[in-house]
Image (cartoon, rainbow, N blue to C red):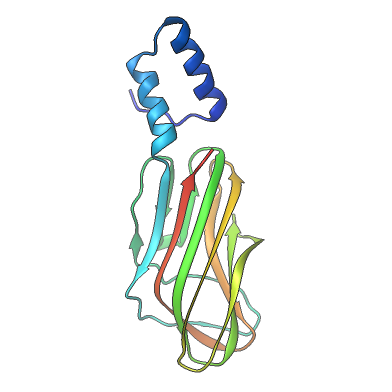
Length: 173
Protein backbone atom coordinates (compact mmCIF):
# COMPACT_ATOMS: atom_id res chain seq x y z
CA UNK A 1 0.00 0.00 0.00
CA UNK A 2 1.26 3.49 -0.83
CA UNK A 3 2.10 5.85 2.00
CA UNK A 4 -0.46 8.65 2.33
CA UNK A 5 0.33 12.24 3.22
CA UNK A 6 -2.20 13.32 5.85
CA UNK A 7 -3.19 16.67 7.33
CA UNK A 8 -2.93 17.60 11.01
CA UNK A 9 -6.48 16.47 11.92
CA UNK A 10 -5.92 13.05 10.34
CA UNK A 11 -2.58 12.66 12.15
CA UNK A 12 -4.19 13.53 15.49
CA UNK A 13 -6.89 10.91 14.81
CA UNK A 14 -4.17 8.32 14.09
CA UNK A 15 -2.52 9.10 17.41
CA UNK A 16 -5.86 8.70 19.24
CA UNK A 17 -6.40 5.30 17.57
CA UNK A 18 -2.84 4.37 18.49
CA UNK A 19 -3.34 5.23 22.15
CA UNK A 20 -6.50 3.12 22.27
CA UNK A 21 -5.40 0.10 20.31
CA UNK A 22 -1.91 0.40 18.86
CA UNK A 23 -0.77 2.08 15.66
CA UNK A 24 -0.38 -0.29 12.74
CA UNK A 25 2.67 -0.13 10.46
CA UNK A 26 0.85 1.66 7.62
CA UNK A 27 -0.49 4.37 9.92
CA UNK A 28 3.03 4.91 11.28
CA UNK A 29 4.45 5.25 7.73
CA UNK A 30 1.66 7.70 6.84
CA UNK A 31 2.50 9.74 9.92
CA UNK A 32 6.20 9.83 9.10
CA UNK A 33 5.76 10.77 5.43
CA UNK A 34 3.31 13.50 6.48
CA UNK A 35 5.71 15.02 8.99
CA UNK A 36 9.12 14.51 7.41
CA UNK A 37 9.04 14.57 3.71
CA UNK A 38 6.92 16.88 1.63
CA UNK A 39 9.13 19.18 -0.41
CA UNK A 40 10.12 19.94 -3.98
CA UNK A 41 12.14 22.41 -6.02
CA UNK A 42 13.10 23.60 -9.47
CA UNK A 43 16.51 25.15 -10.10
CA UNK A 44 18.80 27.06 -12.41
CA UNK A 45 22.45 26.08 -12.15
CA UNK A 46 25.01 27.99 -14.18
CA UNK A 47 22.40 29.60 -16.39
CA UNK A 48 23.54 31.50 -19.46
CA UNK A 49 20.41 31.85 -21.61
CA UNK A 50 18.93 35.34 -21.80
CA UNK A 51 15.16 35.81 -21.66
CA UNK A 52 13.88 39.04 -23.26
CA UNK A 53 10.96 41.04 -21.91
CA UNK A 54 9.10 44.22 -22.72
CA UNK A 55 8.74 47.10 -20.32
CA UNK A 56 6.00 46.48 -17.76
CA UNK A 57 4.96 43.12 -19.24
CA UNK A 58 5.12 40.22 -16.76
CA UNK A 59 6.75 37.05 -18.08
CA UNK A 60 6.99 33.61 -16.50
CA UNK A 61 10.60 32.69 -15.69
CA UNK A 62 11.55 29.99 -18.22
CA UNK A 63 15.27 29.48 -17.64
CA UNK A 64 14.95 26.54 -15.20
CA UNK A 65 17.56 23.84 -15.86
CA UNK A 66 16.28 20.99 -13.69
CA UNK A 67 14.22 19.65 -10.82
CA UNK A 68 15.96 19.90 -7.47
CA UNK A 69 15.60 17.57 -4.52
CA UNK A 70 12.04 16.31 -4.29
CA UNK A 71 9.94 13.96 -2.20
CA UNK A 72 6.30 12.83 -2.32
CA UNK A 73 3.59 15.46 -2.08
CA UNK A 74 4.34 17.78 -4.98
CA UNK A 75 5.31 17.62 -8.63
CA UNK A 76 8.17 19.87 -9.74
CA UNK A 77 8.22 20.43 -13.50
CA UNK A 78 11.10 22.65 -14.59
CA UNK A 79 10.28 22.11 -18.29
CA UNK A 80 6.90 23.81 -17.70
CA UNK A 81 8.26 26.36 -15.17
CA UNK A 82 6.16 25.28 -12.18
CA UNK A 83 5.69 23.18 -9.07
CA UNK A 84 2.27 21.55 -8.64
CA UNK A 85 0.97 20.89 -5.12
CA UNK A 86 -0.45 17.38 -4.64
CA UNK A 87 -2.03 17.79 -1.18
CA UNK A 88 -3.87 20.58 0.64
CA UNK A 89 -1.78 22.21 3.36
CA UNK A 90 0.32 25.08 4.62
CA UNK A 91 3.60 25.52 2.75
CA UNK A 92 6.77 27.57 3.07
CA UNK A 93 7.85 28.96 -0.30
CA UNK A 94 11.42 30.18 -0.80
CA UNK A 95 12.92 31.70 -3.94
CA UNK A 96 16.38 33.08 -4.56
CA UNK A 97 18.01 34.20 -7.77
CA UNK A 98 21.29 35.68 -8.95
CA UNK A 99 20.77 37.27 -12.34
CA UNK A 100 22.25 39.56 -14.94
CA UNK A 101 20.46 42.23 -16.95
CA UNK A 102 21.66 44.23 -19.92
CA UNK A 103 20.02 47.58 -19.12
CA UNK A 104 19.79 49.73 -15.99
CA UNK A 105 16.24 48.99 -14.84
CA UNK A 106 14.27 47.89 -11.78
CA UNK A 107 13.65 44.14 -11.98
CA UNK A 108 10.64 42.70 -10.14
CA UNK A 109 10.16 39.03 -9.29
CA UNK A 110 6.92 37.63 -7.90
CA UNK A 111 5.32 34.35 -6.90
CA UNK A 112 2.22 33.43 -8.86
CA UNK A 113 -0.31 30.79 -7.85
CA UNK A 114 -2.20 29.29 -10.79
CA UNK A 115 -0.91 32.23 -12.83
CA UNK A 116 -2.53 34.80 -10.52
CA UNK A 117 -0.39 37.59 -9.10
CA UNK A 118 0.39 37.67 -5.37
CA UNK A 119 2.01 40.27 -3.12
CA UNK A 120 5.00 37.97 -2.59
CA UNK A 121 8.18 39.04 -4.35
CA UNK A 122 11.13 41.41 -4.47
CA UNK A 123 12.63 44.25 -6.54
CA UNK A 124 16.26 44.83 -7.47
CA UNK A 125 17.72 47.64 -9.56
CA UNK A 126 20.61 46.67 -11.82
CA UNK A 127 22.93 48.68 -14.01
CA UNK A 128 24.16 47.51 -17.42
CA UNK A 129 25.76 44.05 -17.24
CA UNK A 130 25.38 44.06 -13.45
CA UNK A 131 24.84 40.78 -11.61
CA UNK A 132 22.18 41.21 -8.94
CA UNK A 133 20.49 38.90 -6.51
CA UNK A 134 17.39 38.75 -4.40
CA UNK A 135 15.03 36.44 -2.60
CA UNK A 136 11.58 36.09 -1.11
CA UNK A 137 10.04 33.74 1.42
CA UNK A 138 6.42 33.27 2.46
CA UNK A 139 4.05 30.90 4.21
CA UNK A 140 0.93 30.18 2.12
CA UNK A 141 -2.09 27.89 2.34
CA UNK A 142 -2.40 25.87 -0.87
CA UNK A 143 -4.82 23.32 -2.25
CA UNK A 144 -4.12 20.20 -4.25
CA UNK A 145 -3.48 20.92 -7.96
CA UNK A 146 -2.42 24.54 -7.38
CA UNK A 147 0.63 25.53 -9.42
CA UNK A 148 3.43 27.84 -8.28
CA UNK A 149 5.65 29.76 -10.67
CA UNK A 150 7.94 32.80 -10.64
CA UNK A 151 7.26 35.77 -12.91
CA UNK A 152 9.37 38.84 -13.56
CA UNK A 153 9.08 42.24 -15.18
CA UNK A 154 11.05 45.44 -15.41
CA UNK A 155 10.50 49.14 -15.98
CA UNK A 156 12.30 49.01 -19.33
CA UNK A 157 13.00 46.70 -22.27
CA UNK A 158 15.77 44.30 -21.32
CA UNK A 159 17.16 40.81 -21.24
CA UNK A 160 17.33 38.81 -18.05
CA UNK A 161 19.71 35.89 -17.44
CA UNK A 162 19.22 33.76 -14.33
CA UNK A 163 22.69 32.58 -13.30
CA UNK A 164 21.64 30.51 -10.27
CA UNK A 165 18.16 30.22 -8.81
CA UNK A 166 15.83 27.93 -6.89
CA UNK A 167 12.13 27.81 -6.11
CA UNK A 168 11.75 25.56 -3.06
CA UNK A 169 8.40 24.53 -1.55
CA UNK A 170 8.12 22.70 1.79
CA UNK A 171 4.91 21.55 3.49
CA UNK A 172 4.85 22.73 7.10
CA UNK A 173 1.26 22.04 8.13
